[in-house]
Image 1 (tube, helix red, strand yellow):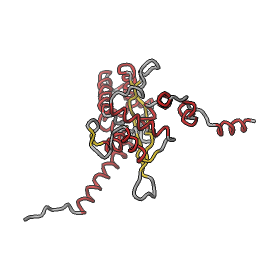
Image 2 (image 1 turned 120 degrees about the horizontal axis):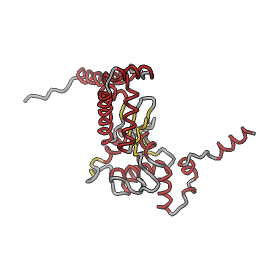
Image 3 (image 1 turned 120 degrees about the vertical axis):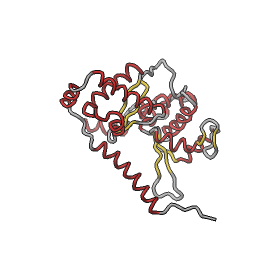
Image 4 (image 1 turned 30 degrees about the vertical axis):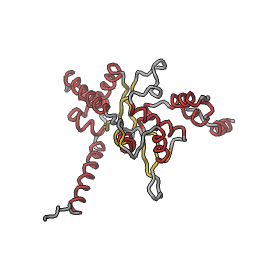
Length: 269
C-alpha cells in the first residue's frame, strides 16, 4: 500500500514565499505609481481621443460596480494594474469622470475610506430623511444581522469582545456554531466576509490565552451607517430618549464631551 506523499516543508515554505512576493508586488505596484500632475494629465488627454477616454472611464465604472456587488473595497493599485493600465497618466481625470457617472447615473458616491492604502467604496448617495432608514428596513437579512452587530458595538462604546457578539446572535436564534439556513457559516460570514468588506474589524487581543478577539466598526461602516439613526432606533426599541445615552449621543452628533468643552472654554479665558 502506497502512502500519500506529504508536501515537504520546503514546498510549503516556497508557497509562502510566493504568496508573500505577490502581496509585496501589489504593494510595490502602488508604491511606484505617482499621481500625475495637472499638466501631465492635460498632455495625456491631448494624445487620446474623447472616445478612448470615455471607453476607459466606462471600464473603471464597470470594475467598481462588479466589486460593489460583493461589497469589496477597490485598491488603487489593483485599479491601475488591471483596468487603467496604459492610461495611468490620466488616472485622476478618469477617476473624476467615473465619480461623476456614479453620482449622476447611479446615485452613488465614490468614497476614499483608507487614504494611506488608497482604497475606495461606493456609497448610496440617494438617502433622504423621507426614505426608509437602512437601520429600520435593512435591504436583506444579512444586512439586518450586520446592523444588529454594529448596534451592539456602538452602544457598548465602540469595542466589544467576540463572546458578546456570539451571545447576542444566539439571542436572535442565529448560532455561530451551527450552519444557518439563510447565512450558512455564520462565524465565517462575520469574521471573514464582513471584515473583508470593511464593515467590521476583527482584532486579536494581546496576551490572551486561549486566544480572544474583539470587534470594532470598519471603515465602510463609518462611511455608510448613521450612528444617529442607530441611536434613534435604540431609543424607540427601549422607549427611551436617545439623549439619555450621553456618550453615544455626543458621538452620533459629533458633540464635544463636557471635559473637552470645559478645557476649551478655560483655554479661551
